[in-house]
Length: 421
Image 1 (cartoon, helix red, strand yellow):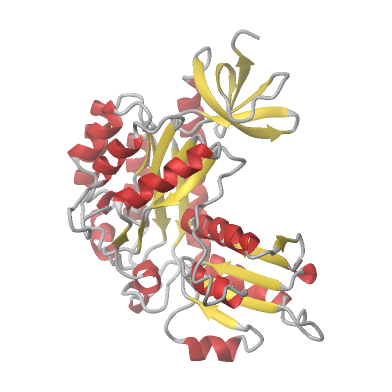
Image 2 (cartoon, one colour; image 1 turned 45 degrees about the horizontal axis):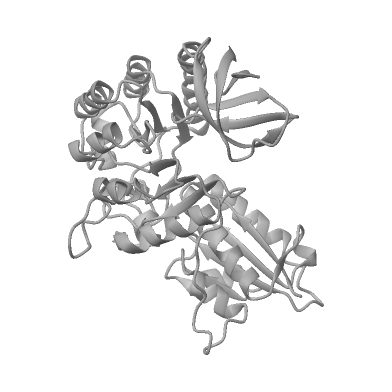
């Protein structure tokens, strides 16, 4: 039996595609090995959204350069690092056997030995410990934000048919999955390219009745496409979790305009207020980019001020890095690296304080926890609002939904005791 080694960096979509690829390789008779030196088939699933991610891919490729000498191992680079300029990639990495565009799993499987008679392997994403599974529902993005490479690498928005998604979720639930996470680069615009124009709210309504499915999540949202129907769907559908990722990117109107985000600071704040009024228990997470071209200290302060006022449950912050081919790459990268790092750290420190205050409000409360595994001898799982909870209890609880009374809180997790134990 041949061995495969699969290395993944980047977003949840990359992770979902790698899970699908792993299932396909195993259907072809491969088995996963822990080290590339043991593999006959090696796949690196790449990301180029930020320079740091691309640097990691290049370093990993470099470490494999001498691996193939004297061995008949196949090395594949797939993902967002692969663009239309294959000649440049071939010159940089001549030891790579094939370059595959993002999400093209069937091509990788053909390179692994999928024959014409087999045609294709039907893929249903393996779940994480048969509990939570990523389900891609759309690929690509039409927004073309100035800093973002995704539309150039993954293409324009393409939605999967509702019936196809529903059937996949039913199959996953039959295998033990309790929670599905619907994925799209811009998940809120799901369905606009399909003949009947179903939207994400309609898809959630179709998934809600599936027996055995306990929770439904979706990401990533775009503030411009978050509408009343979707907000109401979160409000009235019990299985849809009260947890929304709503990327901000900047709290300054001039920077938002330069980014091409399509909304103002005031419009974003109004949307947040509307969501919280409709869903009082909602947990909001966001993304922020610091150091975008033209972001002086005053404009950065506008972001800090908005974060202080809005109080997000989670903030993912990254320093801006130019992506060749994007509109922003033509702008002067005029914020020094040390300033970018200092601003990122200021956001992280603010968020640590904010998250500590938010999580302290859960002390003494009983929360519903979907148990996903064990760490350090303790069970852990997530609440509907995506809070990570640790607790001690005997017996086998993997995949169960239990009530936990919170006794200790911190910025990144909660701890408690199983109710009734």
